[in-house]
Length: 327
Length: 251
Ligand SMILES: Nc1ncnc2c1ncn2[C@@H]1O[C@H](COP(=O)(O)OP(=O)(O)O)[C@@H](O)[C@H]1O
Ligand SMILES: [Mg+2]
Image 1 (cartoon, each protein chain N blue to C red):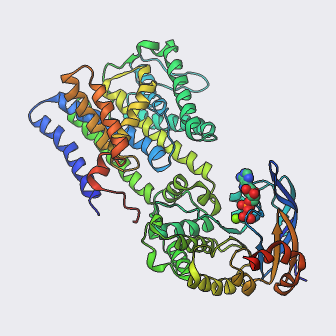
Image 2: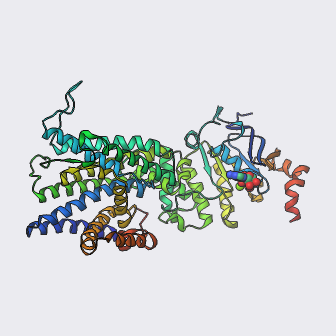
Image 3: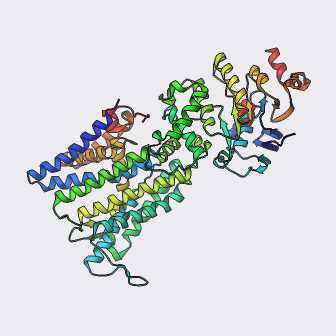
């Protein structure tokens, strides 16, 4: 019953082999597709912490994806226009440095998740879904109506941001960077899932009363998970914006929230590599089915329905069998 | 006489027209087992829930070690040292037996916000958890998924998790239910020793166990305590015989 680690390793191997092959055969488009998979997987890994481990069905994770995206967009556009963000009381300038942009994306999406979570987690079930959706839409409409950064049209960044020692304009190098981040976050998540915090969080999903009875408050537990979850999805947003060199309010839309959720469900809710498998499957379907028919979403819908009805563990569950509870 | 650890004063609770607690007063003293008996629907579980903080009383107060805890929630009361088992097992069903016990030990220790160290490798927590499982006789089932346990075993696990909390007071709601004759006997022997660690407020239907264990017994009927006393006093009490024990004789 220890097939899951092998399957996870295989997923990573394929995700690494495809762009390397594309690099060898000089097909930058395929490398970009693989980079998309990696970044969207990262967004899904973030959501999976809240949804899969914590049982918090957030329909508003696009807001963190968008915050991350706009953190990149705003900093980079100010830098390319040589306009400081703020001169008084302290001088804050834009930047083209990825590490600084990532840190900004993480901090602001974490703060957003902390605030939204603090309010939303007072509700449960359908109300929680609706309130996170509502917060997400609030950000969406705000982004549309905020003229300073492109409003509805979004913001273009002419040159990809910089990372010390790398040429980020080279698709394979940017892929490698994103892949390394995904690996690091997956490692962190695998530790978190087995930590004291992870045990309490999972137990609270299964039986909140049990956790309270042993003297552990579930609200703070969930709020912390939601905050970390938002921060990871925010980081993915910053990378996504850098991949496209473009941010727009679409990143905040409920469709984006839905897509991130689809990655998690397709791949396997609560499975560490579920979002990776889900995002890969999604992008493959989008490109294969999307080439065959404009209405490929119908097939995606059917597939999703099949997973929800017949394979609750998603793709990973189908391949690896039931989750092993014991460590 | 020693000060009570737990003191319940004039607790009232109604669900619409159903009066589940009517001016209930009782206490629990160090080293004792105080049994709470009464027919089904008398309000025993409702009383336990009010003491544990799951439901708020309409009026009255609960004092724990001299401190009024009526306004505190379940988590705070658990942290003060109220260790509780449920009539209907309430466990994390997808986790293993050992993980449920470790969760209890973790609750006892606090410091839940640890994100990086594997909790199932934590010696101190594992020792506490294994020790508790061993005390209730579940050590061979440590690696089982909790959902795969029998009902009786789940009750044992409930008790084990409460043990890991090292509480100041045990609140146990029908721990013998579903255990079978042998299991009941074993648990009776165990509780008899456990009272030296912390006093037990014991709701139980198994009258053999109650009369064997209890220092004092309170009888609850329609939300009211109609008598409190030693086993002999309760057996001899005419009102109790009429309202409760008599029913059993007739059956
Ligand atoms: N949440 C509730 N809502 C409405 N009525 C309840 C609720 N909980 C218990 N009751 C009622 O209160 C009475 C006492 O129930 P309970 O405390 O479970 O009895 P016991 O544990 O002694 O069998 C019963 O009549 C029961 O139907
Ligand atoms: Mg009951």
